[in-house]
Image (cartoon, rainbow, N blue to C red; front, side, top):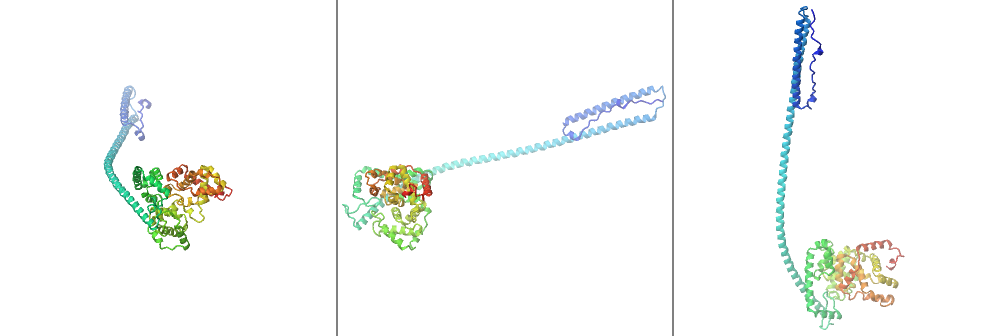
Length: 547
């Protein structure tokens, strides 16, 4: 009996199983994956069917051929065939199961992806909704802000209209007040004139043709030549009217500046300085001087009255009393011994000596205080003196040995050499040093040297611009009289005679115009002051030798 041949295993190759790793499925497109599984299944079925047909054909052929041979067929071979066929069937079944699992995995992956896409879409919708709400909120806020801005504009416009009306009312009110002040000023001057006439009659000053003395607007006795000048000026009534109109206009400007002083001082200082150099109206001078000196920073309520009850050194008291008669002797207000003016002057000077024991009392103070008393009461004059010494660094002129005076002389000599070298050379040649003619200038701020109408103009500028004007005025004195120094060659005695009349009869406008002709900065003064501190002990220095 012949063995039945089923052929070699290589003749019936099993379709290769395509391996799929679970991680690879994530990278596959789900539709492609399904198509691939269907194709593999179809190919596997086709190959299995083909193999079965060939096996059946071979079986038939073998059976047909074996009819001539022995009919016994090995039962073991048949069993083996059946087992192999069973294995193939199981393999096919297993493969189908794997394919179904893979398909289920792909479907699960697709469902997860769809879910993720759905969640992502919902998240995007939420974000869009939030952004839309935020845009609506921002837009609403902008509209609300625009509405508020529009309301503010309308309110500001209404406020401006109201402010203009208030400003007009204020201007009308100010003009009425100015008119009252002008009338009051005229009335005060008339009353002052009457008081001065009565005072003059009491002290038997009857040297004038009318039997009474005549004074100027500041209460100083008018000399004969000054009377003639005054009478000549009265002939031109039209000029007098023009002067009154100009004076009224100046008072209006100054009244506005006083009411808006901080704005002018901080933002329009040049305009304030220009108007000050032209002169402050007499009726506003007290108030303006207090503003310039920052008087309120030094004022202490009731302090001045408290000092009245404080004792004073007897020798100092006697010195103050002796100097009262020497202070503005031509003024009707101060010339009476123990009169009203002298009593007020004594009270201020003695109280300040008690208040500032470091400086005490120095003779030059009397003229400065008398100047202040011409415009204000004793208490105001007291604190104005205090602010002048401390705020303008004048204490050094009133301390023992006058420590600031030599440094001031040093600065002045340098300036004199710079602007008038010929005069400087003449003074040096004749041995004329500043201490011989300029001590009163710097210590008393020219209050003992200038005519009163020029003095108040100098103080107007000094209190606003500082000590620089004092150097300019000193140079202006010499410049105006420069030719007089060279008229005679009589040495030091002649020069001293010139200085005795140096400050007399100088018109305020000419004096200030000449003074402002010298270009001088605070920086230059500060540099010279520092320079003096470094060389003040050098006796070989050209300027130190003249101090």
